[in-house]
Picture 1: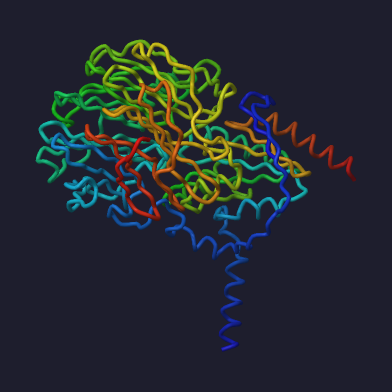
Picture 2: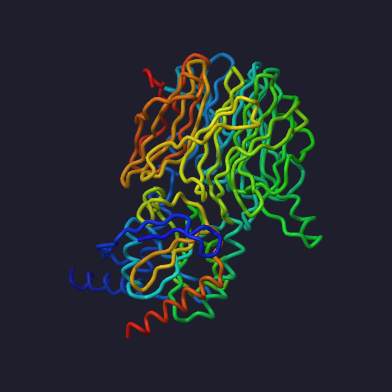
Length: 169
Length: 418
């Protein structure tokens, strides 16, 4: 019994640690509590969280710009969250992220049909409009940008964050 | 603490600060197993994946001329129709309209549309995503045998650019007026090197109960491409459409257009100056109802610079001017999805609010043509995903129609002095 349990645990560990197949980005299921998990994982680091969706026209325009931004800005964590609740969405989501150069970003996808509750945890004032970008500073303060983000504005924010970080050290 | 910015660079639109005192360490999601768990019912807005009413995500009611209730719903990738003889307590065996499982438009503002004319002919319309780029297509169907069978769904227009957010209105003589959002004009714009924002607002008319539709005609280019339309007929049978327009500076505020006949759209009038400057998909369309005395009653959501939240207004001059917007609901409970209905017993409005755990449907009513309103009261609640709350009247009584994942389909009369 103990050996069976050990084998099961080993297989589970292997599955859990296996990287997403080459060329495919991992999509984390975003559920109740995921926002707090995400905040905790990035605590103390400037983080840009982009909410988007495959059916959102302005998102399709913004996504490649965010991909280029991530490539150029190594000092900031870039997270995307697909906030469309769509059946059979993961493949389309992965494809769009890869094409936009965001395959290696930390990518999440809404995975709870009760979207009001997910959005409420993130920001009670958010009614689901996308794209939406949240800038989480090193001190934990958050600035929400409605609509397509201006990449120059994001770059300026990152520089400010990095400068603040250097001063603190 | 969250500071909100509009699209304009660095302009703080609204600010409030909330201290994040505790960061909860949630269970770590292991990569493989977490993914394997996805796509089960908890991830869906539906309670189940088959085609029964209890599995539906969107349910649309309509009363027939004999006072019997009809429902059209989306479930399991199909559109189905059923009839009730007892005000929504029981339904006939549903008739499947779609032949094959389709990639139905699942957007928050999408739903099947149904209209039943005085001869019992049924017109249907709904949208699908027709390709991997999520371009939409509006399909129509009809029944000429009292809902026993439906024609195979076909496109409302031969143009194959993206279309979504169809709306139907049925005239007393059986004419079906359809409007939808259509991106066909972005192609010539781009070929000429011009930018094309949003989508065109188009319409077409069916004189045979929704069997065939005439030529698609443009009402206005460059309207917001991702919000539902609200449609109603005025006392003369003229179509009136409320939609989220795109004004100069990428302002996505609401407007109305009133037709002078079935073919001629009138001037477009702005409902309010909310100044919601946003290059995004709000996914929140308006609601419109026209009273027997001609008053337009409208409700909408905005997150503009001037005002934020849900609002109501009325027009007593045929949609040319509107009253000052009246805020609706508790701002800290995210009021959304308004539906207003002018009936024989006054004007009724419902909307959703969420308190962090449960969604409620709140209601208020007016017995003086929208000049004053009762105190809001909660008439329904649920603790999981839900459709928009809808109101419908059979000419005698007003009902709430609300599909919920946890509690199924609800069809309840609005009781008491609301």
